[in-house]
Image 1 (cartoon, rainbow, N blue to C red):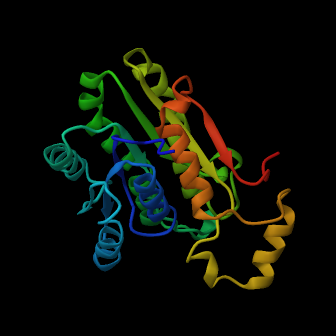
Image 2 (image 1 turned 90 degrees about the vertical axis):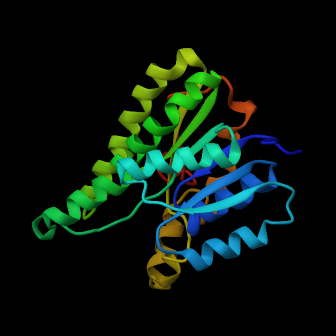
Amino acid sequence: MKLLEGKNAIVTGGSRGIGKSIVKIFAKHGANVAFTYNSSAKESEEIVKELEDSGVKVKAYQSNAADFKAAEELVKNVLEDFSSIDILVNNAGITKDNLLMRMSEEDFDKVIQINLKSVFNMTKAVQRTMLKQRKGSIINMASVVGVKGNAGQSNYAASKAGIIGFSKSMALELGSRNIRTNVIAPGFIETEMTGELDEKTVDGWRKAIPLKRGGNPDDVANTCVFLGSDLSDYITGQVLNVDGGMLT
């Protein structure tokens, strides 16, 4: 069963990790997908090529969601190519971890700009289209760190907590037009980045999780499918922790 048949989606940061899984699983469920990348042109081309026989339209755009004008330009281009936007997944994000005493102002500002400001930029850019359609689903990627905090990640935690507050406000502002805004807060998700970490450390993290494993990008992508589909038509303003029970 294809849960996103005929829907058009934008996924920011779609060339690697969780974003890449979202693009692939959305296409598998029948969605046409526009996704952005910053510098991963080769990886993006490979994704488009891999999905060209999937029966849906998939297109990559080089765009910086943290830039207000670039976000507006992106949405304009996507509308020209896809005619409507039903789902927005704000997934682009970075980390610049450090204890506060060692954190530079630049590293704080950059994480807020890319993680949080990008959500404002993209939501504002798609808002008009979704208001006209009187329908839409906005899915914002936060983190369990935005829910509970984490030493050495004050900038990241602030950006992700900000996403939660922003999303709840959007749920209240846009709900009367049938535009839903929800948040996914992933826990420990095993991606290319975590593959470079010490195995003993990673195993310790796994053992501390009630389900006794790290998540994989598909666990998050499948939750995006649910929130983007009509199955979640009466759900807005919620934070779904995809964390194996870490915050239980």
